[in-house]
Amino acid sequence: RHNFSFYVVGLVMLFGVLLGRLICGVLCPFGLVQDLVHRLPTKKWTVPLKIDGPLRYLKYIIGLVMVVLLPIFFTNQFGLAPPYFCKYLCPAGTLGGGIPLLAINESLRRLIGVLFGWKMFTLILILVAAIFVSRPFCKYLCPLGAFYALFNRFSFFQMHLDQDKCIECGLCEKVCPMEVEVR
Image (cartoon, rainbow, N blue to C red):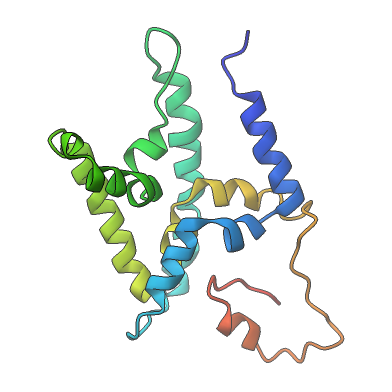
């Protein structure tokens, strides 16, 4: 009766309340790949705050446009919409599914088109960025992380600062790979 995935959204909300951003930090396989690539011995970059701050809102815009608005307004004759974010931007499926399937199935390699080329370009760009910047996909592009961030205040797993032990040195913020403002 409804053109909205109440079960899917409800399940994601449940995970957001139960686990919060723990999902992003511990359970996300593409986050792990970015962390491993970031460990390559190179000079690391710190994105200037005047660029980093606004860029962190990009994932909310991507979520609103590619996950909410496009599927509402651009559907096929059956009222179904492709998963726009997964299809056109998310590199995790390319790395975890597309490349392995192409490696083992020769008939699929003959069907590669422009979309796969775009997805490979996106994957390579994000992995190269991950060499220098910690988790660039998570920080700037992932709408699932943006959705889970909405539940940070309600999540059972939260980061807490022990004010009695804090000496305001800022070391926690310097070593945090996601550059979270802890204090």
